Image (tube, rainbow, N blue to C red; front, side, top):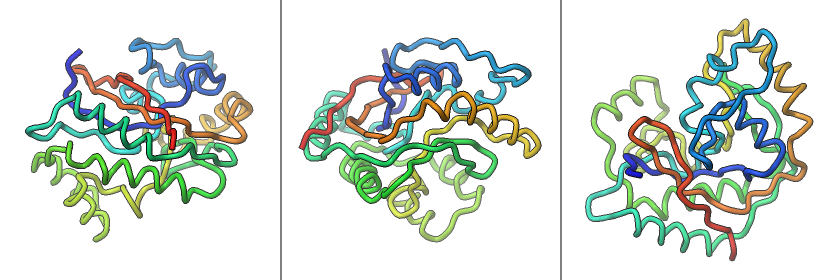
Length: 227
């Protein structure tokens, strides 16, 4: 399969109960490369609620999607991911919880995120030689959304505003929802997903992802954190 962009994600374990449920909720199984059956959700329009995050699959971004830089290739990126993972140890947090991020719902970590943030920063900085500069139109679109000075500096230097000190680990569960719809969706997820969430929450590996021509992301390979 040919990929247009690559990213480094935390990809939840495919065999965990919580991730199986949440993969169905989003409707795209990025590990199997196929659509996933959604849960029964009564009056909720799951397809509409999850339309935006569906193509990315169930994940947390560690290094945002990037086009490969000239002079680099897929094989070199794979080798660099393996080398990076070999220098890092697994990260353990107290758990995950459902949070609001503006008008989105996402899973956020519970506990000390220092080691987690350091892992994400390493993904951003140590793999940056593989990132081609973003097109001017993409940079302009990011700036039009409104950025702080630090976020703009990140955009210029690392290709994305919300990295390093601006990074917040999150596993997106919905698109941007009307304010009036948030409580019902939040209540449903609290009832169905929250009881399945892991305690503790452990990140054992990094996932190299590829974006196909249709915009869907696929798992290419996992790399165990093994230092």
